[in-house]
Image 1 (cartoon, rainbow, N blue to C red):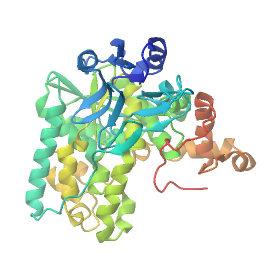
Image 2 (image 1 turned 60 degrees about the horizontal axis):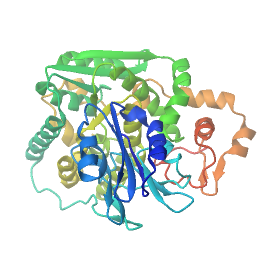
Image 3 (image 1 turned 180 degrees about the horizontal axis):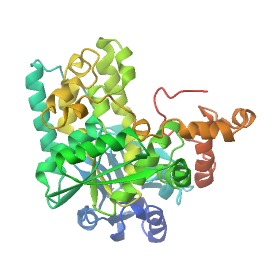
Image 4 (image 1 turned 120 degrees about the vertical axis):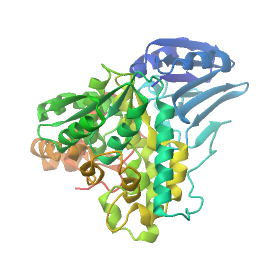
Length: 448
């Protein structure tokens, strides 16, 4: 990922450099900070995103761009700054105003805090121009496909192939975060024919299901496979780093980020970019709770949880990879794939109590039968983390501490002792912030 930061005032190179210092992990191969019209903008380059500095010099645009219309962008205008973000919020962007009322922006909160404590997330599909935040595009279901399941499966496979192929910038080698679940396995298998050397990466506790299934897929696609086996002590040691980079205290999000962070750290030693299977569950009904929703309301629910990806699962993907200078490629969330998926009848997504039925049909010839039929396991479950961290927090935080500390703002209440454990670390890094509305919360998270 590239790092971007700026302020709507010229002559602020020192400040913008400080902001970029905080997020130099996003890719510090090259850096440029310049005055552009009535502002000061800064970007860093990764080898994978070498066009970022050229774009700032030529067009006065600071852009964090992962390709495929996934971007966060700031453009200097003659009379101000325009900020914009892709329709799904794959790339992060935050903004605020200084004590003097000057607009500033950055790709991560930790950078923005160098200029202001007034923190706002730019919503997906929105732009900020002339002091107004307005939508410019949105996810919409534009009519249901009137085709057979066989035809839809064939077309879906072709669109996924095109999405994967478009994101491969180096045919010599490619990386994929591989849990052995359907989504990550599918993207890995789709990418394999287009690269000479495929690297796959998995992480988990000893005996974790993900490790076993990932090895199976790696053998099947003939990848160079790497794995990391971790213990509770490793997770606790890594926890502060994860929360600092993740910028969240949401319990399920932090829990699922721990092994993700560690496997991305390993991947960075081998490749500059990795595929991720994020988005498959939201588009194709992969979660077990969806089976309890009436069929006529399923498409509405899927649209809702897809809209929520930007500050939950996509934030995990972005922060865990960018912490190590990696680019995350989310092929399921290509605009063409998303548009098509939203038109697939919900009866083909959850069919005869089988989640992601149409996706399984589309991929049946690409993967071993056991992988195609593998039930959904949440990232932290498949990695074997389970409830280890929840149990640890329950043992180390007394009931009275939890009741005293769980109300952190007038409208945010912590759900569990585990979440309090994470919030304490979050607070050490980010201090007291009056408005935490930019912190995503997992829908339906258990409360205590």
